[in-house]
Image 1: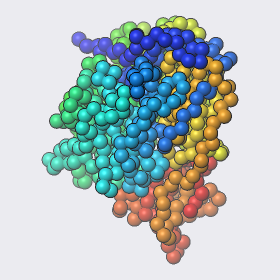
Image 2: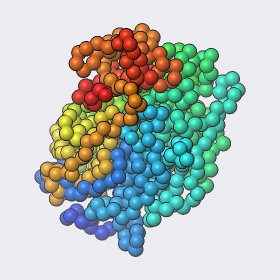
Image 3: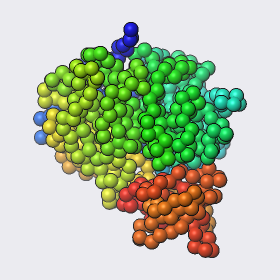
Length: 623
């Protein structure tokens, strides 16, 4: 007999807080947002919103703008009723790539506290798709019972990239325990020991707190050093920050099994958080490994796979790999570009469901207790993104997808023999097409009250100027865009703006480049934001070195022909990039960046090959 997990949407109500919010917002039970996408299922649903409704936008707009010290890739978090310096505040916690953590008054925007956890790592491995600094990349997680916010900081310690896990006090932002330097070991297929190497691993997914344990996923930087970088899921005991005796190394193959010595099988998910059910199982999706498309192994390499792990990380409980996994490998079409969402318990034969979608744009509706059991698939558009979920006023579940530049609303049907989804409506979100497709959404509603559900979305940067990003509010009943306004900027067009809007207690928070914006009733309908300084954030070049952008026209081994933005063709020899493991496998029809020198014959001799955005508007000038 199947054992259904009893999942709880873990949005904590701060019941003691009854004071009215400033700005004319009435009193209501105060909602905390303590983890990525609101809960461990990663639904992105605040179902306790009593202030904002679909009819609230006549006086909705920008209330506050808060200056920060660097780009924000992590989702803001919120805790109400925190006493700081003798006064009680509702507090937004924001972490930046400069390794800074801010505590900000959730209404006034006043910076209450700021701490810095160390010098960030600049251009790790020469990878610049994140911007100059990599510091706090993954969304932290908060435990209101311990009063801690748990953060992983990437620190340049004595010129050595190092990860530290911190437990910081919500009231002081001081360490409440000695920070732990992250390390791990595992065993490869041939029995040899393999050590976690911080210099080649990127901690990008949101952190997970489940069953008294902390979890984090790791991937790579630009696919560089793929001969050394492998995907990991690591765990620690929350009470002591002690690491687990076991961990999950997603690719345990050796050189005999990987013809290009290209391992990876990263956990990156565009920053989406690792998920967990109430039984403690941990869920994630992996990306690509060797581009030969030959190295999938259910025991040693779970590439392009949705995975369910036991909470102690000792057992792979179930997995699903799309049948076209080899093609996904060949063309760098990561399944793991998006996260996995668990749905709350459903009626019907299969109460436990999960959804996931990646670059190829296929949404999989799966049995969360046996991921290999896929009920249906749907085309939702290419996705560097993640799903959301809520229950409509008809009492039926809705899955929200956001592939390409379209947000789609799917009604869940569980009454038949197999669960299925039916599209209800959709809306186009202007994202400028300057970066990879897809974006992130969240939902607010007053339970299932009719007219209360609002889907919030932040698209990719739009063309021109400081590359503004836009906050949109959509009516999921009919696809009407209720509100759309500039909410910040993202001048780093080479790195994706994986921005998750946070709605709670009648206010909406958007963190972007050096800025947090706060929207709500009584705000300005037109956002007059401070100018964002557009600077060249790319990796510095060595004397005599050049960097060029183009679209791959033909490719045979290391010999690549690209079409530059001028229409001119250029031959690129990538053999040095391949041999030095500074080679992100390109594909015909897609864009690349080549760094190197121009040989006497006019051939561009590349020492590094990176992926570029396919839209030329996102290409900086050649140099």
